[in-house]
Length: 351
Ligand SMILES: [Zn+2]
Image: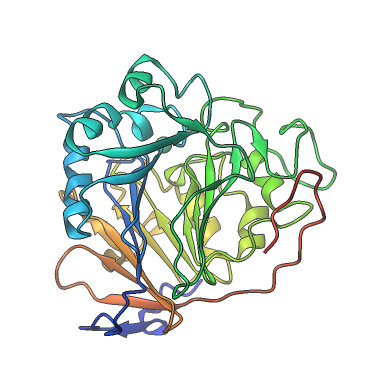
């Protein structure tokens, strides 16, 4: 982890968008939901995916932030709305969102904790339950690298593993036995060419084991969404070792994550070049926070997003916080060798 040395990253000021006829950039906006989840993904073809809608409280202000990011990305409707799980900090905003923006398709983890009466009304009962191994259908273009949004885990099932999530595994640590809503979250891997983004939601320690053991089904991750806002019971060292993230991004809040324990765990990951945070956590000092330039919302600030832009031809992705005057930092896309998973009856992930 080299974040403390600011000069170890390439700093590009005033970088222009590549001037090819076809815009190949992929954009990912991680928005401020005060410690909730809201991520907007916009593909080069303009297809939009929103993963989670933040909380309804207070005053639907988080939906306003989604609309702001949509305006920045020229998005006028959501093509795919994914609800990872039923906690209010991830699903509470859906009622207001559908009032404000057309949504074409809905997806969730198929769990009754997600599909409460308000959710069923907002989705008009048309939400599709994602199972591990499923892909959300995304438009492709022969001029572009393949775009895939792949479900790794959902509702206590993991691709390639059908057993008891909490059963002890020889030689591996386990933590907790909760089968609550976090553990049931729908977790995705977005790949665009060799770029990978891991959308963790609030997935828990024991579920994380099965995504990388005995087969690493994720491979290397360029951009790692810190699970559960950087709180405990998540971000299993086994998974971090396996995916070797380049950049970690925490959708935390001023009073919610990253805990110093998780921060220290992330800092210890050798591949990690930077941790970005949505908010400065006022409970901790430097031991639990990234440098200010990597934080979208300093004390007293709200509503700023962190945006990742992927340039496949240049082999880089850029991280940008939405406050003015903060340098955009570029990181190399680093595909690593990924052993092929063992054949799984019914079709395992092949990449
Ligand atoms: Zn959460």
